[in-house]
Length: 317
Image (tube, rainbow, N blue to C red):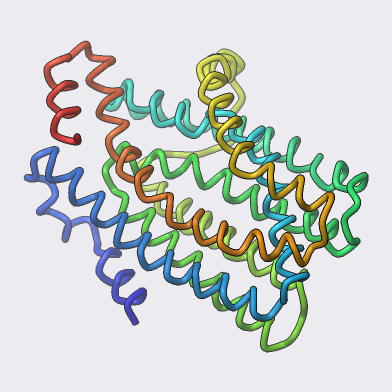
């Protein structure tokens, strides 16, 4: 009931959001943060229910397989992202009023992300062959790589909502995606279809999240497939330092589960991974607030407006 109320409340037509127009920047940031936190609270609750249901149904060994699949693919997800998500927010915020330029920029980076995702996530099932995993885990890696493809594409679209201070759209798409995941997991548990069916539900949830975001984002930007090498080169050159820092952070956070999966049983990996999965859901809250602020920090820095930059820094702190 609470999630349906949130969706109904957030999915208002633009004319009903007129009160946002006259808000000060600080109030808009506070409102967007509140909306995002509310959406994240609902999706977190759904996520915890899903994790609990999967853990009970799959058992220690089955949930260990799930943990191994996710941890293994997250390592490849580092290569897919490589800082492009944060860099996209920065680049489209530098010229906020130039829609044609931003549409061209976003389309090129979206295509770059699609190519890199297909390349690196396509390698994951091949490399998994040499690991001493059960066959069902290797099949799960191949299937769930599609989920990471949709997640990686959706991350870029979130930057558009951050720039336009419309994080309600992100909240809606995430909640709808989680509801699809919840429905899929409970359906396959009822049908007793096993681990691969659960991973299929994960793929469906990610796809629904991406699809809803793609529908929403077309109100603010045009996203097509495009190739312009100077834009690709500029994006890569600016993204790689951020990508390396993200890589070290995620390796620190996820390498232990991958290493454990090589030397210990899937049941032990499952016991180790269950609390980690809940923690992953909870630690995302600080990043939401920073994500709302970033477009304005970039804009004031690009416009050489130190007073507004400092004011925003102080207000946000």
